[in-house]
Image (cartoon, rainbow, N blue to C red; front, side):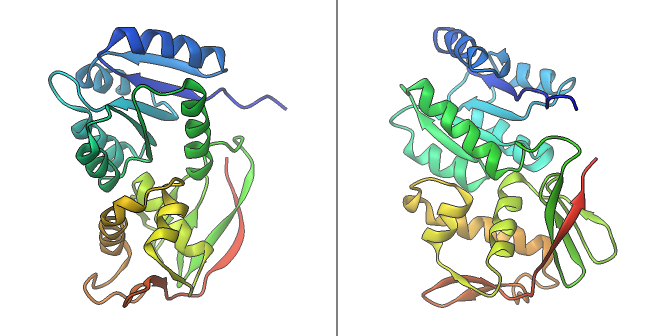
Length: 244
């Protein structure tokens, strides 16, 4: 049995004095790191390789990190950790709302970043070895594959999910018919003390409803509980899914 491939990271930051030593540190921690200095270079690199996670600076010349983050979340479904300056609170909120998985504020302790990388990868289901099996989820004919982050409708058609949408749906499937308030959902989905970002939950719920509800304005599955948060109104079953 071969060992799983090491985690690959794409590091996008225009500041060489941060990017280069951070890439060296992460390499020393066992990651395979590609580093680029702009969003344009990141897009070019992504045309030929698919990393497990992207570390993305927000403030860069040309296309900024938030624009690239939106592309990565919506089109590539890649986990993203934002690298932000202390004064960028609004940008952090926007980043979480569009689906970034986490953020760290510069200057940061590299060991903290490594812990956040591993936490995000666990939540995204990327830490499992290829060829293993994982308990999948089924509800009303829908199936959710945790390792492939793939949702299929009752006809078997794949419904694309961003990483944030996948984590939200998985949280609901783990707690069917339970009322989950925003703080609980933020903890389950973001995995950090993100209570200042309640709007991120509402926006992610709205996007997920558009994917799985017949009428997103009158949802059958993700129901709003007045004063309480949300409830996933479906019976969920678990079963092994073979991943190859």
